[in-house]
Amino acid sequence: MLIVRNLVVSIVFFLMTGSFANATTDWQSQITVEKVQGLADGGFIIYAPTGTDSNCPDNGRLFYLRNGQNGQTSDGIKTALSIVLLAFTTSKTITFSYNGASTSCYVSSVVINP
Image 1 (cartoon, rainbow, N blue to C red):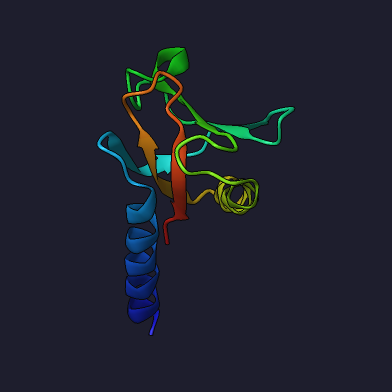
Image 2: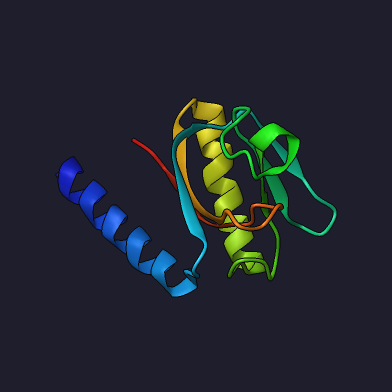
């Protein structure tokens, strides 16, 4: 049953991210969340291990979620924040899609890994 649930979640995740996809969508998987920083505008920053993507700020470790960037909405940011905080507090890894061509590395979707 767990395998079926994970497969369904993966398919739904793939279909959801396809609607926000652009020519520069990159993926990172099995990423450990080192820190989470809230921003005044309601967005947040995921701190990944140094060198995760050399195009991203702070030696390739900062990934931003902001309203209106890379398909994000304010509700989407809240959902993503809950997923990221759950991963952080339970030592789970995450997989996420983001705009790797942007130096702000705006994230469009996040999934917690089993």
